[in-house]
Image 1 (cartoon, helix red, strand yellow):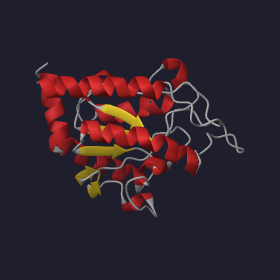
Image 2: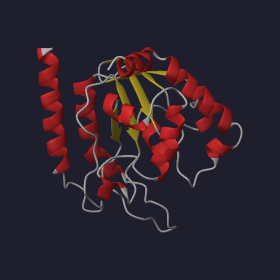
Image 3: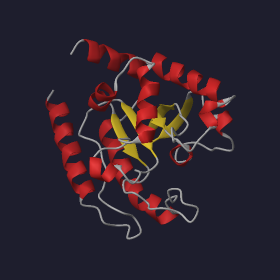
Image 4: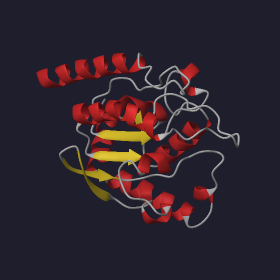
Length: 211
């Protein structure tokens, strides 16, 4: 119990420092981050969209609505998930718009700058189940040629000193049709089933029911 309290304080301190980060001049603040939640489930997004900064939490707009609809099908509401899992990201500030009108993909320097925050979260939480959402998040953990190679599977990854289970999800963007048609539609359901059956997810469901 003492150790958990110490870790919670360290995580809260980490988040406080993260919110003050100004390393990337090309990014648009504010920093978007999660609340300090001790958990063995780490969800990693790509980067916040233009709305999340004002709303003060990750996955707070259209993509988030889709993501949390997916998670409701495997037993948990949005607020329950936010209270019992930790939402991280490859980058924590809005990258701005690209030349084609969509959100700009963060560059390698921006990804490297922000990786120290993710590394610290893995160090503090020591997660058993990692859920990278979208291509940019997935490639930080596994080699990726096609989404069909990884969606619907548990991938064992040696990361930060031990083996961890990685279950990728497609990005729930409204601009994406990948998960709305085959084979993406079926693979998404397979991925959600794999997540639901994972021991860390089952423990979270038990914690929610027993709260």
